[in-house]
Length: 155
Image 1: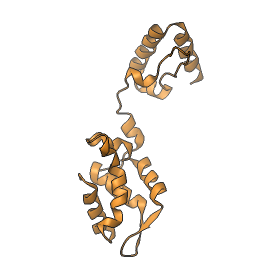
Image 2: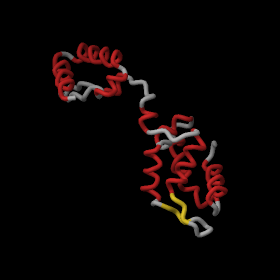
Image 3: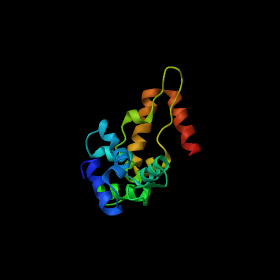
Image 4: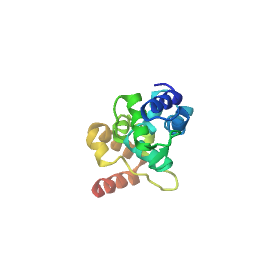
């Protein structure tokens, strides 16, 4: 479905009441279209964690115009399933991000060293992470090498 109104109309058919009863929830799921107007906007809220966040924001249930309580989680699940055919996890989305060098942080003039990628990410992309660690050490000098070694032993 392409528009929150269509999702809201679908909710009204499924749960009763009017489309307007559900529109705030469906608008929330699709708000990220404001800054990324393609399918990738869904990575921010179209997952199990997003559904539970909607429940925190809108409450456990809404009362539709027919006077019936409808669980917000059901409305969120309906929205995500209509768009994706299933309910992924946030991890399903995040694992599809192709790491870029800037995402790892950097060594700054103030001496602050941001951490390198987590061990789990490196397990998934071992060769990529190894070459990034080596490149970072070469680019950032001896302090970065010490930081990288310290990070590796603490993980």
